[in-house]
Amino acid sequence: MKKLTFAIAGVAAVAFAASANAATLDDVKAKGFVQCGVSQGLPGFSNADDSGNWAGIDVDMCRAVAAAIFGDGNAVKFTPLSAKQRFTALASGEVDILSRNTTWTMTRDTQLGLNFAGVNYYDGQGMMVPVDLGVSSATELDGANICTNTGTTTELNITDYFREKGMSFNLVAFEKADEVVAAYDAGRCDVYTTDRSGLAAQRTKLTNPDAHVVLPEIISKEPLGPVVRQGDDQWFNIVRWTLNALINAEEMGITADNAAARLGGTTNPAIKRLLGGEGSFGEELGLSNDWALNAIQAVGNYGESYEANVGPNTPLKLDRGVNQLWSKGGILYAAPIR
Image (cartoon, rainbow, N blue to C red; front, side):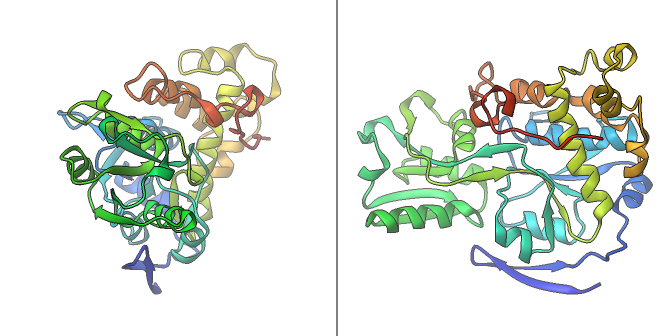
């Protein structure tokens, strides 16, 4: 197996190039579960409660893959990873999937021996400040102390933004997300910057969330999605098409509760193909033909997962926005199963 050394955001790491014949599915079946790399605690995306139960939109992606393989969305174990650790953990085989609010970029897609299987949340970087700071725009932040995570695209984006605007700033970076939150909450920084979804999530951890406001500027594109190792097309396809299945299910009105009934009561060929009543699409992935049915029943369609974890009725209160289906004004669009 070929050893690769790479650097990202100034951090050196070591990866191992996967064999072209790597059989992740066989390894996963042999151990009986999917090992999923998640964040160290980002409410709405991947976060553990006091009993160690994980929940979030990224967690649902892992559970959906587990259900597609085993028919059981609980056949998954979670490994919390910092931004600095995440790519090494995936490349070395410590985890089977990285589903951890990770931005798809060219460097990550071409130089780390990894593949992004799709986008499960379209985001953009923002900035949060205390209301008492008295600013209403990022253009008023010249000379600010800015908190963020190390090993992320946020470091690069904030540098680009301030350089373009001709402003100075002092970056205060931490490896762990909770360290960033604690430093900002303690007043060590004027600004907290990360993806806007992350700001909504971490704002809930602050001593007085209402004393902080997210500024209107969105300074980057942050397409977030699940990541796998290069060299195993079968595993890549399983993760990609599980995500596609959840999105297509929402478009077709298929939910966790009605999926079985829709399979037995429809003449729609597209629904039959998705749920395993027509064709051999599961077999082409190395799975049973009810793989998508099992995934949908485990976590719901994409919209159900969104609403349960990050939607307007959750503490994050995130509207669908661009993450709405393409047919409803958003940009969420999945390739067809046919």
